[in-house]
Structures are given as C-alpha cells and as structure tokens.
Image 1: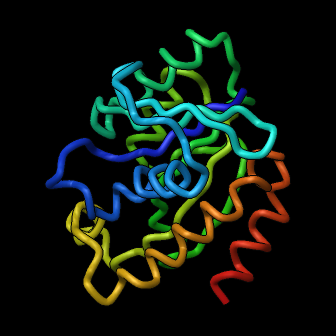
Image 2: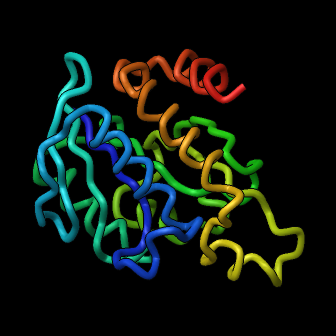
Image 3: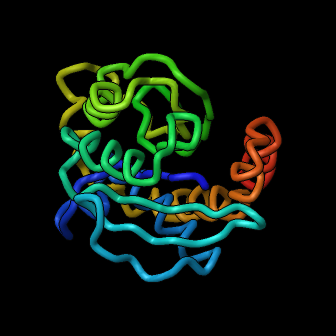
Length: 188
C-alpha cells in the first residue's frame, strides 16, 4: 500500500492557487483512475483506490499547508507504513512552470508543507515536484505562490495534470525515470 499526499490549503478561495497544485494533482489522479469518494479522515480527505495492481490512498490534508505533516503522520501511523510508502505532490518555486521532477529525500527549500512533513515523519519520502516558476524577486514570492493561475495558464496546467494522472501507474510501480520521461513526452 502507498499513500500519495497532495499539498494545498482547504477552501474554495484557495482552489486555483499555485500553492494548491498538489491538491489538483491528486484530484486528477482520483478522477482518471476511478478512486472511491473522498471522505473525511486523518485531519483531511482520503480517497482509496487502485492504480494497476497497487493499492493507493490519496490524502489531501485539511490542516492548511503549514501543518500538513500532522495529517500525513497520522495516516502513516494508522496504516503502520514508513516513509518509503509515501509520495508527496507539491509546488516547486525553483522549477519552471509545468515541469515535473521526482526525487526522494532532501531538504524542504523553504516549503512550509514539506517542513511540516519533515518535522512529523522525517524527510526520506518521495516527492513529485511540480514547477510553478519563480517570480524573479523574493519580495514577490508570497503573492506568486498564493496567487491564482492566470487564464492563459489553464491549458498548460490541465495538460500537465492530465499527464501526471495518465502516467501514475509508472509512479505506483516506482519507475520514476520512466514516469518522468512519459510525462515529458506527453507535454512536448
């Protein structure tokens, strides 16, 4: 069993924020792969399902980004799973918009959701980093991250989310390199 967590903030007013692209990714995966309905659990929303032969639980913490590690830790402890069973989908400032990268372990690069996860469970989990681009100056970061995607970005956003969802079986099979290659091919 694997737990895939999308990071974001709960509430309609945050739905299209760049910071919520993790929520968007797990929503797309749930829709494409026919996951069960979302239900309130582990201080968030949980949707069970299968991707190929693999059982995957999708989780969207409702604790707000800065405290998302509480929900993640609770789910891992309940299922007696370690960090190796965890994948977190999150926005990444230091990656070009709509680019996707995967890595296991590492620092949090100032990302408060990752910082919270690190504090509650450690940092040896897999991350699907979804590029939102850097606004150019550190004074503009908060407004950029907590700003909505622009109308002109909606088609590339939908294409990227669709590619992530379509290639999720490779991620479930832990074939990260092929997952990235196929997502890139779809977006070329």
